[in-house]
Length: 110
Image 1 (spheres, rainbow, N blue to C red):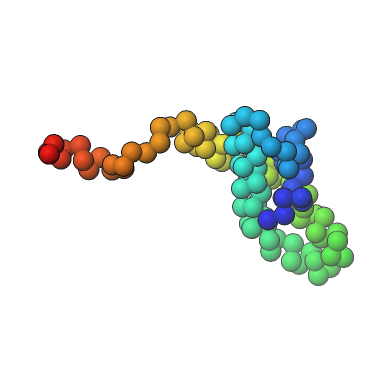
Image 2: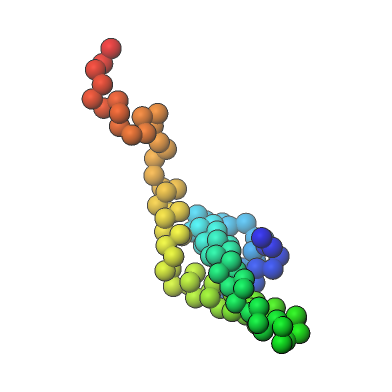
């Protein structure tokens, strides 16, 4: 992953991808943006193969980058992926006990 290549638009209007998050919400949004970008890059990897044959490499790369940016921004801003919400929910839960599956609930007290 190329964190430096992540446009600030993906993380919000004034965000820098290398800035530390000040709140759990900012951290979750930044993580979601990075993760969604990885998914979108993987899904669009071969999308412009035919264009790369007819277009100069830099132009095909620019088109793919624009598409990745647009899709990532839309998915993150819409909240459709729910990663941010799941992270925040997980972070707010109590730490797991030693009895992860409740197996000791019915065990006799010794």
